[in-house]
Image (cartoon, rainbow, N blue to C red; front, side, top):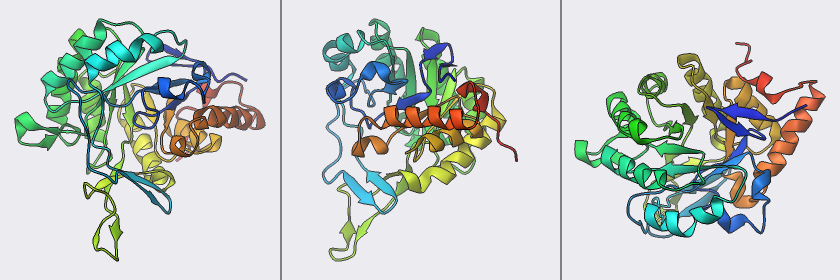
Length: 302
């Protein structure tokens, strides 16, 4: 059987990628993981200028996953292009740059910088940020603002544009349609769920910034539902993520409608998790007499 698949024109040797924010810039794990054996990975979010991030503590392990409040800490796109991208350009696997900003112009400028450098397969737009130009409304919760940022980036991007949607919305379908109609080449979902953990003894939040993003096995059933609903609403490829820890988890997201998956929280316990999950996915396909992993996509019987 074969795990090879294609995502908006990008050849993937397997459909299992490492998610943004859980795999650094990739190069940090070169001694622990054969990066070229991965289906691909998404670097941590890049902004126009460096960001220091939120106060500690930034991580809290829950019973069924993890909460984080990193605050989008990163070295900025110019330092990334100079210090990290040359090494990434030597890899044979798909490297995707996660991009974020607080106005459409921020996304445009980050992509414009990256366009001048080789080594990337695509861009993933993190739209779970407040638009400061429009009074703090989140791109991810407003179809008009979502379409605005995608429409601004698409004309200057020679690489595919993937849009990472937030689950913190009343309905995912209008946002998925807005992304597709604005020209997105693919959609990744879901991002983390806004959550709160409390220390009952101190009566204070467990995280320095208060609220944080919940990820891990706890969110998987909800993420599967959102992937399925988005797959019914649009015809562009989907990347599913949310609590994937085994090959069978990955298979479930493909069955729900995803073309590929991203592994996030599991990387904090073992950076080689995507490789193990890809092997387990291959074993699952062999047991089920599936000759190509692509044939799993969108086969849910409702």
